[in-house]
Image (tube, rainbow, N blue to C red; front, side, top):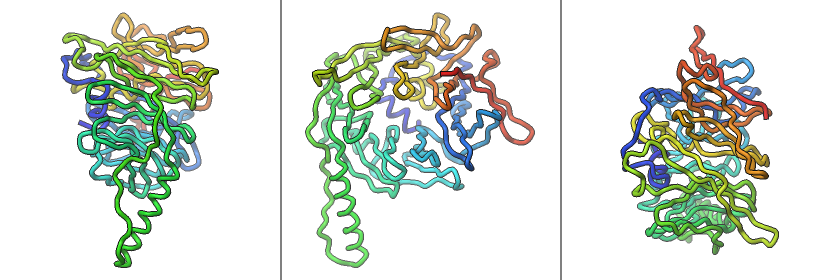
Length: 397
């Protein structure tokens, strides 16, 4: 079981219940985002066949694609800010692959494991949630393999961090199941001081000199403000996403002990919170959607589980794009407009289909999903030259 699914199991509650599987949902193809390859832009596309996951670099003009990674499983793939490299999690290690180089760089960050999605500040610094011992904490990590714990204590789990400028947001959950969204400041200066101290320590070791540096394990975050609190004992919060420092979104959903035994789908609420003119936080539930449990759990599940099924948006656009199960059990793509609460179906297929959340590039919204003969919009063929010819549906935005 890969790192990301285990993390989602713990927080997104896709474990410990019976499930319904669509037996033919075994091959998926979906775009992630653009990356630079030899002065031209390609789109990173993940292809899953059974439990095998591979990365393809796809040209949206020629429709040709080739393998972008060998001998590794690119789960939780994230493109770095320069768009010349990407990171992923494989065998409990963060790996960084520059497109121009043959092999990825590996960060061994023992004793951390069960890494969440990596968020890059620049090409040399990132942050994420990871498990240390029995709890999830937030960490600042460098491309050189140094890490600094941002949170402290062993009574809470910290997940889904979001940095906006010098402000920092995350979800905190206690042992009783109470979940909150909190805000503080990112401790950039304190991290710089720790890095300097670490460099001095390494120099002392090199010169066989006594060390005045003692490793500090307490967190670096300053006191926090609670933005939202969930006191419903059967609910949990996940996938916090900040649009800016005064507006964000999150999912609210049922906790795993309360899922019906023979349920075929799982219901999610998508919430928005924002700071009003009086500088006070407000919140509202925007819409609900359902996902098939077969895509979230089991041998034929989507490898990255809920990560590629969550609602998303494009920059400052007021449209939120999401997928929802229709009356036939198919997964369709919709948008929700915040200003007037309008909902519109985007994908228009009468045959069997299953679409995922989209990615955006050059004024177009590309969306992948399940590969099957019924879906003529999403196709993948191996050419005689060892490349792939791929069609991915899109709409102009």
